[in-house]
Amino acid sequence: MSASRVFVARLAGCTVFDPAGDRVGKVRDVLVVYRKNDPPSVVGLIVEIPGKRRVFVSINRVTSIGSGQIITTGLINVRRYAQRGGEVRVIAELLGRKVVFKDGSGEATIEDVAIKEGTEADWAISQLFVRRPKSSPSPFVKGVTTFTTWAEVHEKETKGQAQSAEHLIATYSDLKPADLANTLLDLPRERMFEVAGELPDDRLADVLEEMPESDQVGILTSLGDARAADVLDQMQPDDAADLIAQLPEERGEQLLDLMEPEEAEDVRFLLSYAPDTAGGLMTTEPIIVSADATVAEGLARIRRYDLAPALGAAICVTLPPYEAPTGRFLGMVHFQRMLRYPPHERLGTLLDAGLDPVTADTSAAEVSRILASYDLVSVPVVDENYRLVGVVTIDDVLDYLLPDDWRSHDGNDDVRRRTAARSELRTGSIPLPGAQRTPRGPQ
Image 1 (tube, rainbow, N blue to C red):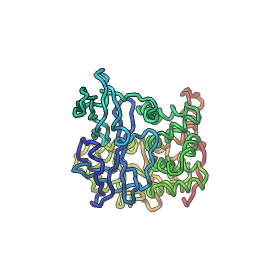
Image 2 (image 1 turned 180 degrees about the vertical axis):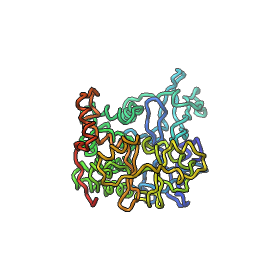
Image 3 (image 1 turned 90 degrees about the vertical axis):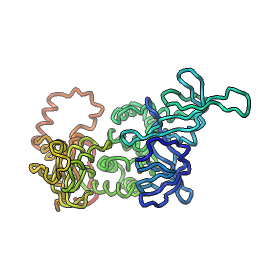
Image 4 (image 1 turned 90 degrees about the horizontal axis):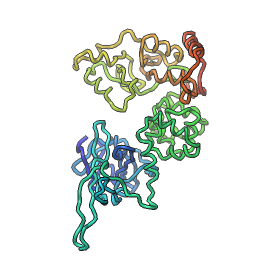
């Protein structure tokens, strides 16, 4: 992305274009969320599109900022933006706030904010342009301006100023999703709903994926339909399908209708399989490339910072198209093997000939045995036409095999229980944990 540092005040009114050069709208503000120990993180832009409608554009959708214009991927949710707890509008709320220098040199007023792109395509506040109080009573004299960093100041507490929401989220910002999920579960139920409602969509989605199903349903039910659909859009398709399967069918259909069409299509596809099959466990978003792709291209794909480690352990090679369900499945290439070959080597020549895919109706017990027998972290899933439809990863299997209360378990398992579990795995008689998902379509 162009322009490593940008001042927010200069972004106001900048035109936003799609990749084809068509005008999308104009920037009206920048959204940030506070973090506990780091500067506030930029989550997106508020863009005014034709019709005076203001919508949210995720910073991940922005591909270029510079020369008085912004270019996006063109994929924009046109639902009217509604500010949520924890989100701070820089122009409308942050500019003009008082800050106090930690070195004791006094206070100042924020007049502009610089945001900068980090090493992992994330943006955060890098500098503050502040003005100190004027030292002369003359109306023609202004205070001295200076640049400072977020770490060098703290906001001045003003009685009645509503900042509790963003500071609350900042307290939890450093927690991993699993730890934050446990923290929320320790709160009184109503307080848990309140705090969950303050979290950004992507953060709440990560947290829900780490919670027991009953608590997932409770939190999702406490949200409005539009917000619930936005959160489901941010979840992994298999996790979203498991959650929707726990809801009344009418409610589930309403949320699916409100979700982004592509995300909803993936979820509906997964809901068509029983939960104790490879189709019910798989994720539909593996890395998929052509046989002509090179090792360099493959390694670049698995370097994505938002990719789960289990999905980055191997790359699927198919004939076109390259989105599930793909063309004919050709094989998988493990990333360790890619490291042994030069960057220009074609991935089609590095396929693992000893790894056979499973079908979508293969039992969960059989998938578990395959992963354990061959020391794999993922196994491909194909349909009756040998097209790749997804992959089952080791974490998918663990989530299925572990008891419903594993997140709150103290870890002191009885030896006999573990011995029984191993016996069940060998014999294929693993009991189905959790609620059962009823297929909604043909398998």
